[in-house]
Length: 249
Ligand SMILES: Nc1ncnc2c1ncn2[C@@H]1O[C@H](COP(=O)(O)OP(=O)(O)OP(=O)(O)O)[C@@H](O)[C@H]1O
Ligand SMILES: [Mg+2]
Image (cartoon, rainbow, N blue to C red; front, side, top):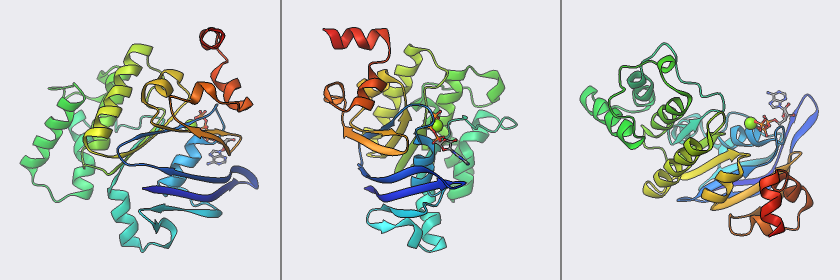
């Protein structure tokens, strides 16, 4: 289990995360929701150890990240598959080389085993046979799926996805969400997804935290997210004509 304890993070003296306390569970899609600029990416990067919190700490299975030795930190890093908000596939590498990258970095797998793993991951994201294509030759949705394939190639225990649906149509977004949910359950991963997509919230929100201006305002799941009496959460959810109609029913 990943635990965030009294975490605060500052940039240039401005408090961007303010005393966040929460837990993220294995086998579940844990969602961090909140409007643009609320601190979702900073929180996810802090959980992954890419940013150090000025106050509080992050722990993995009761081991505090900041207190770990260099080797222990590398071990945790190996267990993390990260899908960055910007996508971040290597444009000069083929799809296959992209997916092999974590295997080359973190495993002693032989060439043949690596090739088999690439094919398995591509099949898992429904992109069999595109091994030799370059990212520039793919659609946005295909690139996201390759990013997922790359993130899971080294069999991570933790899957962190920062806005996996950004720039995708609603139907493709649902496919990506379902894929993330399926692999989370199948491999019992602790998945954390940053999103402001209400479809994702209602589809895959096993555990949801809502942050507003760097503070945790509400925690719950997809079954009770529409019934909260938190004003900021309701303003966030019921801002579109469609969700307003749902509320009026
Ligand atoms: N490296 C940085 N240096 C300075 N300020 C930063 C840095 N990264 C983020 N911030 C600030 O932290 C705040 C939270 O940013 P963050 O990227 O976490 O928002 P977000 O919730 O992910 O938004 P979005 O939905 O647009 O991705 C913003 O005010 C942002 O300007
Ligand atoms: Mg972000």
